[in-house]
Length: 259
Image 1 (cartoon, rainbow, N blue to C red):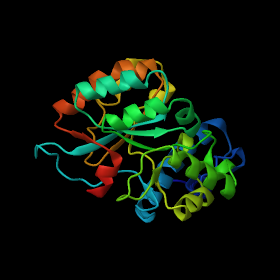
Image 2 (image 1 turned 90 degrees about the horizontal axis):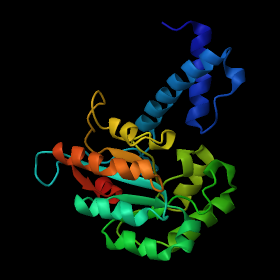
Image 3 (image 1 turned 135 degrees about the horizontal axis):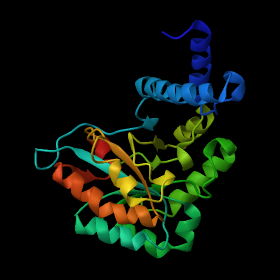
């Protein structure tokens, strides 16, 4: 049972995180407490947000529908931060496993590599904005954020039957940035399984997020991965093999949200 003072501090931290803010040192009394309560507050905030925020505003996972073979379930792999010089290698691995994925791409890189945008689309994958400049959405004014959304979307294929999707850089959101995205017609897509490939340079570490003591992927899971990382590329065949062995259908986020 948390002491009353500690509980109040946890509530303040959870509210800050839920609103997209940082864990301020003034909320907590020590480095250890900042670490311990900060992690707890993030879990609380995520749980609260998932319970109360409509899926048309923020999506953490898709619908839990059976896979095409009737045995496994559908999950979606997502790749942030491309396109870049490793994109074609990622596409080759995905093709080997007949897997479709969703690429959240940076507008500036799409301008520099339009041929890679075309290659991703030709492989049957989805492309959606990840910002134009990769600046954190809460740091942008509403006007600047709307411009980033519009310009990046204009560089990508259109999916007229679906609501446009966006993933904020670093997964960083605030009520203001979420509101701007909603008013611009976008659903913000986060994730339910983090591969952790952004905090390592080891392919084994990436694979470990899908193996061993890690819980199996839940139905409708959206998985966070990144482009441009040799260790993620090296891990990808093993990850895909593991997911196929578990019977999962690897679909796009759009398909997952459509049910």
